[in-house]
Structures are given as C-alpha cells and as structure tokens.
Image 1: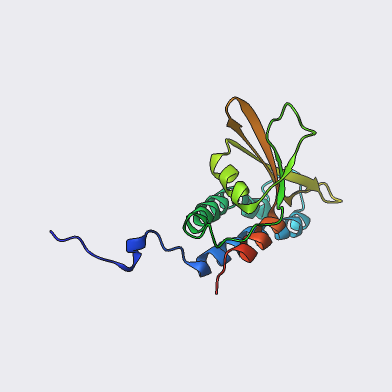
Image 2: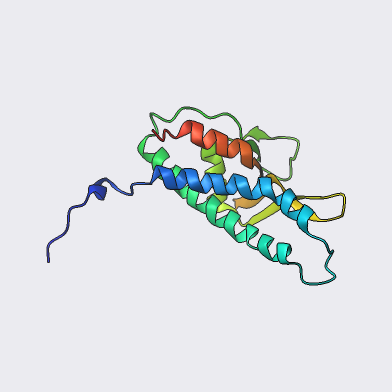
Length: 169
C-alpha cells in the first residue's frame, strides 16, 4: 500500500474561518447570557424552557476554548518568529499562596492554561429578578508542581487579541 501525499504534509492546517466562527460563538454565548436570563420567569419553581437552552452554555464554552487553544498553539508553534507579542487578556497568579503577585496574561499563556486547567469556573451575576447569568470572565485553576495557579481570563479581550495576533487574511 502506498502512502498518500496530501496538502497537509506540513502538519495540521487550521481553517481560519472555523476559528473565527468559534470565537464569535464564544463571545456570543457570554454577551447573550444576560438577555437569556432576563427571559426566564421562574426561580427553580418549575421547568423553564429558556433555562434548558442555557444548559448547553457550559459544554459549548469548554469545547470552544479547547478548540481555539489547540488551534492557536499549532499556529504559534509554526509561526513563533512571526507572531507579534500580545496585550493582556487577563491575569495569571503563578502561585495561589501569593495572590498579590500577578502577571499579565498573554494569549499564548491563556491557551496553555486552558489546555492544562483542572478546574474552570464562571463569573456569575444576577438580574434584577434574581436570574443568574454569565459575565464574560472565567477563572481557570491548575497545578504547576509544586504549586497551584489561577488565571482570570477576560473572554472579550482574549477573542480580540486572538484575532489580532493570528492573521486570517
């Protein structure tokens, strides 16, 4: 059997349009969360159709974050010399024992932490009616032996910086 030569002989070829669509979905989930919450009428008293729609948010956020993080790392590893330095998209506490010592979070480091996180938490708020919604910030936690780190990731800044860094044209 002969080995087939393909255009992907140089490795994976991320599809730029797919990445932009995923980032759009990620931002849209967070920006629409409050609007969805305002449509809910009950507070756990009965089945709520809008709440059922929002139940998919967590899984989609995780899927999208993993997809874009992996894609960025592939692009970054290939074009490391051509990837411009990024502005901060959050903060990194390298050691939770010293919470006053934080550093700005680059997109590259954010992607690393997304891939290595063992806990992810949303930033929640309530509407005037007491309905919970997601703010566009997430908290990632994980180990880097022998300490635990924490990332505060601003989703909007992450998406904007990601698109600014990775040339899609």
